Length: 311
Length: 311
Ligand SMILES: [Zn+2]
Ligand SMILES: [Zn+2]
Image (cartoon, rainbow over all chains, first blue to last red; front, side, top):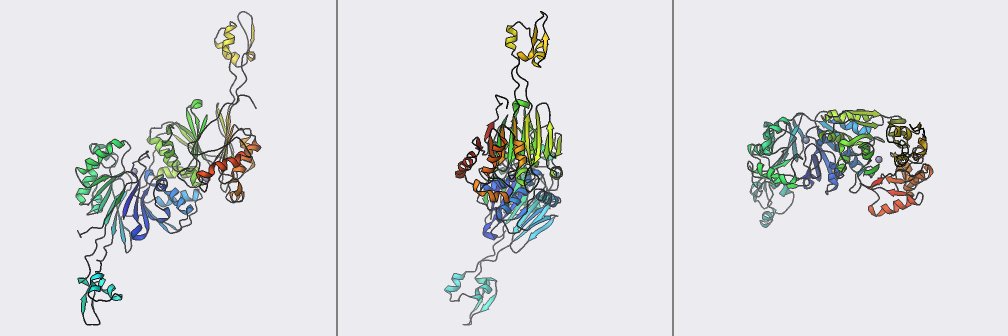
């Protein structure tokens, strides 16, 4: 489980920061990539990575501003052109379906894979035996969603070595022990699975938010998250302007992470008014409120580790 | 009058060739840039040039395939964001208006300049005292236009030095002489403007074509053009495939230039199946039919000189 930032700028593309897109790499977990937002030239950014567009399984769109969606029709078309045949689902606010269907139809783009477009409402958007994704509305000048991606807890690991050492022969029995059952061996011994299974592995939680002012739903989505990705369009001293434009400052984003008791924070959606020389200062502004903060840049990669202990 | 190729690939972006866009630089002539096609990330390509998006006065779209239009909504928005306030006109096939209006509205993109969208038919698209632009349909699997841009002829230069040497005083008189009139001086001398005016300067002609199979309208548009820009998606030995996909080969494009008696040919829309090592060979294939051929690459610039003699 890794996050790869594909575009970390705001509003318009700049040489060093493209418009928004973020890839959640679930290659070990399900051999899939989930994309969050798809600004123009996201597929171009992907050309400079090892990501395979055909592995993109889901695309979540936070909101419909151009810098978050204008790369979508091209990416969908190229995924087909490059041999993608597996199903893809796009989740986005109301209006995404008509937009995408019109763009694909007008341009004569015929996809060779099944495309499902889900117009979201608040609540659980997706759930299977591995992950749940929940969406809540944030505070922006158009409907803008934040997402909480929750990995299901995994059962503890069975200590097969110890069982073997104690003469318990491997077989279907092990599955029962792993499930915590108590079994009686042929020699009469009674073995409780619980004694041989480690603690359950807590699933990881990531919160990825669209453009927003600081708001309570941001805190809810990020509650105890292993990683929060929050916009920080402006520097700490520009709270007035951030509010006027429905965005957040570095310090405001950090305050959300602090209130949510998140483990780590990545800042993105950095305005092009800040040059490379300013970035470290922006990061420090946030770190003074929430120390475990990184200011993302394009192609910045962060690994989300499994928590060693339950929270 | 220069052409700057912004994207010279076909279908999908590749590392070395972006999807289609071509800038006609009319900076000396009218302090303006005209764009032909606007594939995804055209605005990103522009970031790597000295072009100012606010100077883009007209955008001509050859056809509605995604690799020719998906950069348009973003470019229009960024032109506004970056302070563009002067009027812009987009010319394109039927459907372009609904597409653009929907994309801008959905994304909440409010332009701070007047945007006019003209859905084209064959014929004269635009004419003023400097240029005429004519469009004709080509042979593609959707409506695809070619454009002939004709610069108006310029009157010959008045030899003011000689007039002064002969004692003809500068003044409003010179304007009449330049227009070819005959005037009588106060001292009774009769001066014929025609004797002091050089030959008229023939206006330049450029033909820029959208995706097409070889066709007669291509020859008509390129007739005696100073420069023809023609697609060459495939190599000379792939005529069957080119035909199947409604495209042209290098040799077919060159044959159009030869038949049209054009002065020069630039090939673009090169399939990504050809790697950098193949490009010279592709160019040679065309040169064997039409020697004055260049295979364009991204950021390739070509100057179109004024003809020294009338044709
Ligand atoms: Zn944004
Ligand atoms: Zn094309």
